[in-house]
Every structure is written in structure tokens, then in C-alpha cells.
Length: 422
Image 1 (cartoon, rainbow, N blue to C red):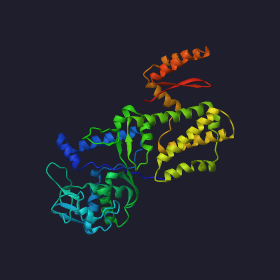
Image 2: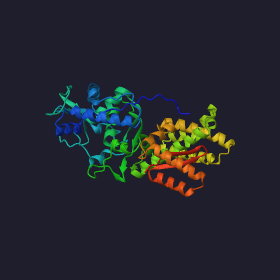
Image 3: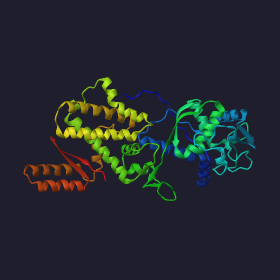
Image 4: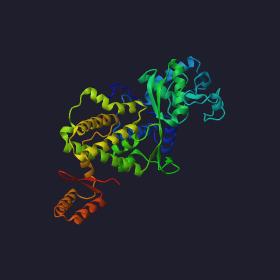
């Protein structure tokens, strides 16, 4: 069975940085209006996708006091220095710099992206505190009015809400250097303790095999995707690849995800509609653990959700084969309840496959371009045609509905219909 581990989850918001200030100045609005607008939109998108909210959602501007304390600790330990109201981190003082990204200081000094400021002792040194400038927000500090640098914001918020060492730190691969490398340097220098035990860096979503970029005009937002596809389909699409790998967004990929959901809920519907007693038969606790073991092993292997999905759909193929034969033997009676357990437990972990199958198809029916009473009328007409062995008419009705996006399935209890994807 899944491990019951308490997770303290924090997702912080950088609500003040150069980009926010520049955008606010361009739009002629207060900087915090820009921050709040995007934070609100992000939270709404996460809610729409069914992402569970974190335990803590701190903002950088709410943690200024803690940032100043960390910066002062770095100055006291000679890892940082003050220049005309600015404070810089001295990269050369931290001997472990580059251990996350695999870069070394000599290579970086030879031409990596660094902040250009001739006053710095070393080109690699980065800002912990930036002195105030006209038109920018600022806060009081021992070094004068100013605002925090980007990297120190995350370290301070992490320490405040998760302690000096955290178990898991996530982020995009583009943040490995310099952001996460700098977080390690300043956090470990300040506390003398390891900053992170495990790093999880996700790959990017590409559009039709091309990287998303404004210049290509192929930026796709979550809201754009939700206009055409369900949140569950988007989640299944994302879980179909390992989180560290890039994933290619396309209409075909999302249609395939919707089709996979149809296949899943159709299978569950057959189980619960035609063999509810078999599907819901009790399973001993020790047997449950053995059934779920390969699925949990895949999740333990760096959250291999793609493998879990593959296992689930292998089981779906097996179940449908057994239900097609409809032979109530020992294999049948053993396989169906085991599948029901897998669907429930792994669906709960992945945040998919947890809807009632009838509600799933009712919701899809509501999106049909053809009225339900018209569909039922055509199904009744087709049923009569089949009774009269007029299979030409029956096939024509099926074909007509198929063209309108409606699929028919003949079952022992009558004909049922569902909406086709694509």
C-alpha cells in the first residue's frame, strides 16, 4: 500500500524582481498590481488542473526580515561584502560552488552568463541586496534602502517554512544554473548544513516539437489548453512522460489522452455495470500490498509515472479480454477486483481516474453537438432495424452518428453511446 508520509509542501512566489518592475513601468501601474495579477491567475490555473494547494504559499515581500537576517549572517561569516548600499555574495569563498550543475569556477569565469558590474570583486559574485533606485520599491536595511536579489528570496523563504535542510526541492531544468547553484551556496554558507537532499528538475513542454517562445508565436497557456481539453486529460498527458524528460504538446497527443480516458472509464463502466459483485469483492490486506508492489516500485524509481500508466493500460487490455469472453472462472474472479484496487489506489496517487464513470460520460454527452433525444431516437431506430435484420440501415445509423462524434457500443443490456474525441 502507499506509504503514509506527512509532507510539508511550500510553493513560494517571487513577487518582486526586475521583470515585474519593468513590466509595471511599461504598463504604468504599481508593481504589486502586476504581481497579484499573475499570482491570482496561477492559483486559478492550478485549481482548474486539480493541483492540491501547498501548506504554505509565502511571498518574497512578506519575508524581507528573514532575508536581511540571512544576508547579515553571510556578511558576518565573510561570504558577502557591501558596496555602496549593495551586498554581493563572494562565490570564490564557497568551495562547493558548481556541485549541482557540474560547472567549475574557471569555466564560468571564462564566459558564463554573469551580472556585469565592474565594482564586484569577482565577475561571478551575485547580488544579495540591491540599493534603491528611482521608481523602484524599497525596504529599509542595515545597508540602506533597497530590495533583495532573486536568489536570496528563495533561500530565506525555504529556511523560514521548511528549516535549514529540506528533503526535496523542485524546479525547471533552466533553474539549475545559476539560481539553484546560488541557493546552495548562500544557504549552506549561512547555516553550515546541507541545503537539499534531493533535487527534482522537470523538463519542458514543447509545442509541435518546437520550444515555446514569443518570437515563434507558439506560447500556449494552461487556459488555452483547458478550452479544448479536460483537466484530467492534460494531467494524463503530462504523466505519460517522465517528469525530467521534455514532452511535446500537440492536438494529437491531447486527443490520445482523451481517448485513453474514454478507454479507462469504459472499462470501469463495464466492470461496475455488468460484474459489480466480482469487481468489488474484498481483497486481504497482505494481497493488496503484493498487487500494488510493481506500481509503487515504479513510483519509487524517481516518480516514473510513465511506467505506472503503462502498467495500468496493460491491465485494462487484460480485463477487457476477460470480460469479452465473459467466462466467470478463477482468473476472472481474481483479476477484476485486483484491477479495481489498482485503479483506485494509483488514481488517487496520480490525481486521475477518480471520477464516477457515469458522471464522466454524462459530462461528455453534455458537450455533444447533437441533442441527446435525437441520439436516443436514432439508437431506437437502429435497434428495430437489427431486429428486422436490416443491417444496412443499422450500419448507416451507426455511421451517421459516428460522423457527428457519437460512438455506439452494443452490450448484453442494450446499446450505450459516448462522445468521440477528435
